[in-house]
Length: 132
Image (cartoon, rainbow, N blue to C red):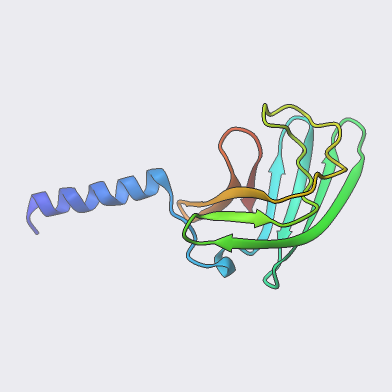
């Protein structure tokens, strides 16, 4: 193989690994996800029937809150959308949201990415759910 072709192939592979890939279908997104940060830890289960369950454990008080709802995945955008009841523990400034147990009405959308075979939901700053 010509060295230039090999170089181009290696560059494409490197870029793909660095920037991640979007899962192709919602079945690639299903599973158990865990998030752990200073104030709380979370367990998020995305079921294949389009439902989810979420558990939030506040570390300081050991308070456990649970939520259930429905979710969808858009492979074009790479976003999962939680349609109701999602508990957003951190606010937009990554600070603890004391009212998280009373979710606001509306949708919550988060990016889904595959990095080196690992699937995660969320952004690098703040809450990132990693599939287990």
